[in-house]
Amino acid sequence: MQKQAVPKTSAATAATAASAAADDPNVVPPPGGTRNQLRPVISFADSFACTYIVSVVGAANAELVTYPLDLTKTRLQIQGEATSKNVVAGKGQAPVQYRGMMATAAGIVKEEGPLKLWQGVTPALYRHIVYSGVRICTYDFLRKELGKNDKGQNVALPLWKSALCGVSSGGLAQWLASPADLVKVQIQMEGKRRLMGEPPRVHGAAHAFREIVRRGGIKGLWKGSIPNVQRAALVNLGDLTTYDTIKHMIMNKLHMPDCHTVHVLASICAGFVAAFLGTPADVVKTRVMNQPTDEKGRGLLYKGSIDCLRQTVNKEGFTALYKGFLPCWIRMAPWSLTFWLSFEQIRTMIGASSY
Image (cartoon, rainbow, N blue to C red; front, top):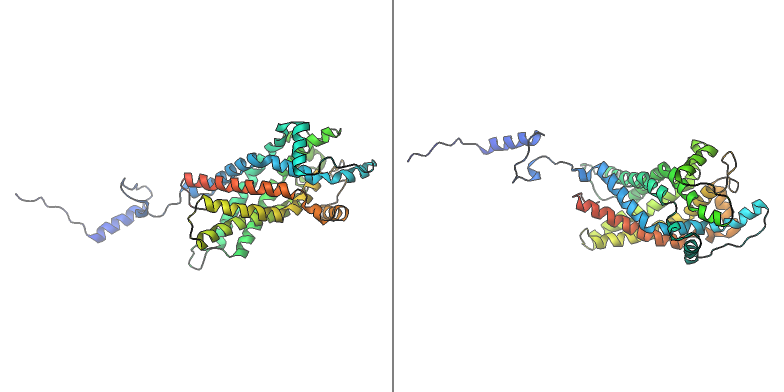
């Protein structure tokens, strides 16, 4: 029986055909083919938009879990101002109502109700739509750009470059999100103002926003933005830089895979360093933002962040700059842990590469 002739195709011809298919975006690989048979394609999971969305979701999750500690920290940082405000009003000295973290939290629950521990969480979530998305994506972009070698390949960043990326991304993100932070701080203090018999300043996030603009104009939304940006730069120096550096150090030195254990260890270190570096600027930021203002939006207690820093140290001592450090650290550690675990887990689930 005579065999039917079959056209012969050389290896070179097959390679040419495969190359042409790879260059044609309309060509779909066969079911049994692999992605390596075509040119590399950046998946949506690794895109800027997806990274932005995942970072916002992770931050919202972390914020909801740890927000009561943030409220407690803010109340603690404002306590030392009671004397200053009474002196300005001509009322003399007044004792501080709460002294410690647990007493402050218990007092809020007892006198204002447990749900007040989440007072101001709405503008806090709004803030993370801008803040967390910008800081994570900016840091990722900067470290990739600064981490390229002469051949265009990404390599591990030295510590000083990683620190530069963390400071820059944190400062930019916080400046953009500063209006939401200002609204959050003012809403957080409303419960205490009403208990002290003072008239309410705001009745909600939208009302606070309108009142700030009415008193100080659009630029009034950035009141306290300088210490705010300084704090964010230091916090992200501690958070992003420490997490990125410690994570890859553990993986390289201990030869561990990219797993939850590595994420937990790196996030705990990041939370502590972020709290230590950011608490002094956070105290100044909170006091500048919360101070009463005149009809033109000018502060009645402090002329600016430097004046607030000077008055705080002169009247209450250097240790006043670390008021609220314990709840700040206790919040930073679980916040950082919750955020990074959520962020890394979601990226793994959608098939994104390791951060």
